[in-house]
Image (cartoon, rainbow, N blue to C red; front, side):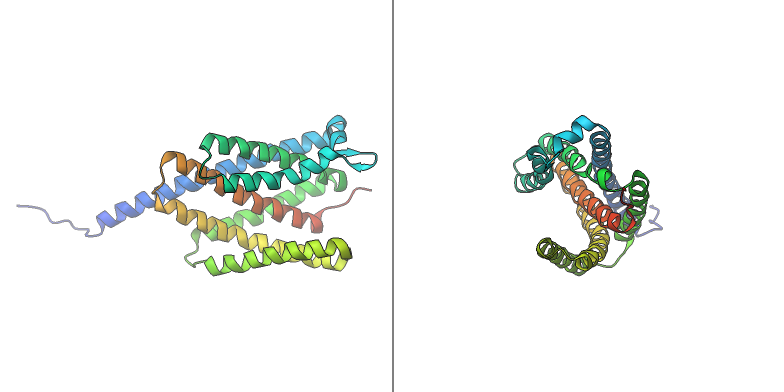
Length: 243
């Protein structure tokens, strides 16, 4: 004699719960790495901006110093290094590079304290956090496939880069304003797209411990860049310049 299972979907439900747990754990790791990196950058930026001897290493009487230019462009090199050497690097090396990258970004972001008031920077940070958080929730919960939408946002990103390079020559304030509007829209959209993409990666649950940690770090780097760029574009609208 046997008792028939009253819920024929029990096994499926258990698998679904397991997948949901794996996904939440993965995304929690991604956001934790991102939060750590943002905290490092924020602390470094404020430290440099509030310490004359440190900011003096980056900006001199004649303008940007050699070290200042290095600090400005070094983060790009770190992103490329982490991306191209992802498969051969260990998770600990990748984490170290991410930490150094966050410090360099913080040092380069210290320049905004020389241009905008602390109050407006804090206000913009709160606005950016709210927008980022909202779009992260959208990306995590929506059932709509955002792949095509993400492709459109990437095209917009390429357009921003090209337009920004052109505007360096033209120096048009109107064009700068338009670029800023498009930038806010693009990185708002990319936030939702990247969160969904990372959620789908985490849902697979097929990565080992070392690889999972590496993917979390790179995912955190992606979301970190989304947030920083969204913040900087918003700062052009909400930032109050110093007298």
